[in-house]
Image (tube, rainbow, N blue to C red):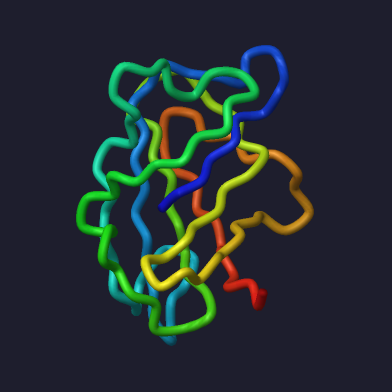
Length: 128
C-alpha cells in the first residue's frame, strides 16, 4: 500500500497522472540500478479527485508492486508525474503485504515537489 499526503499549500495539488516505480535490493543506487523493480501503474482512487491540496490517500491498487517483497532495509521510490502540473508531497510511505512500514525522505527537505518528470526518494524500513 502506498500512502501519499499532498502539501497543504496553494498550488500543491494536481490533476496529472502519477505513478511510482519501486526498486529494492542490496545494491540499489539512487537511479534504481542494481535492484529488482516494480511499477504501480497509474495511482488512482476511482471516482475521487486525487492529489488535491492537503489530501492524504491510501493507494491499494499497485500493479506489479502489489506482491513485491523487500530484500533489504531500504528501497528507492521514483515518483513520475506524467502531466505538466507539479504536485507537492509532505509525506510518502509504503506498507508491504507482510506489514513492514517504510518512510521516504529527501535529505534536508520537508516537501517533495514532482513537476513534469521524476523524483527519486530513499525509503527506509521503520522498526516498530
